[in-house]
Image (cartoon, rainbow, N blue to C red; front, side, top):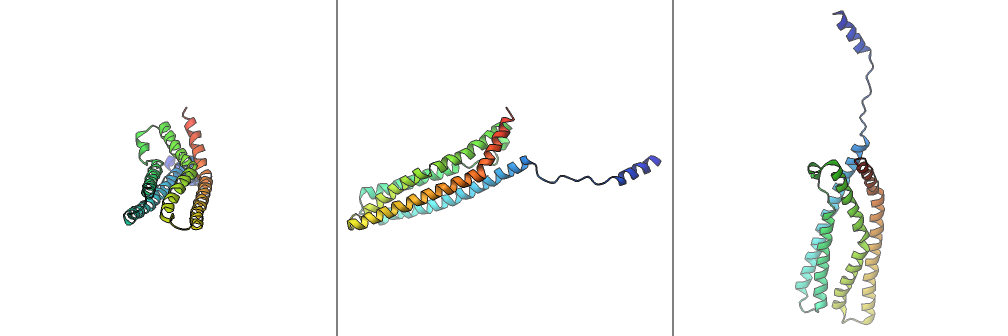
Length: 198
């Protein structure tokens, strides 16, 4: 009994040890990846809705303008095809939440890195998307206004070009800046973690 009382005194005399409640760097990394995954999902969903509505409008234009030139119809169909390709590519960068269950740690890290790097490739091609979109929009706009005066056609097509070039340029700059700020550190940490498995 005396031993129990001594043990009780020792127990009560000890100070409470601080419990480390701060998340580890690895937990922060997985949280950052999960936030990025959710951000990509929301952006993909919004882009899909916006491009789907735009495609519906363009299909309506095809049926509403029946006596136009083949340039008009082919440019609208190519715009729709371009938007479908963009939607597919956007969803390709989405990484699965449940992939972790079917892969070993090294493979999963490499998978995450590939998906995040694919986002950079998409951003790199934004100016090309803007150029193609500009060509196609001006093609169908020109086919609609070709009977107007030369000055009107000149200003209309150049205003379209200026708008598309500015939007493409600033969109590219904004997306790349955000990528470098938010995603680049995640990629670097994942690469470091992946090298530790070698």
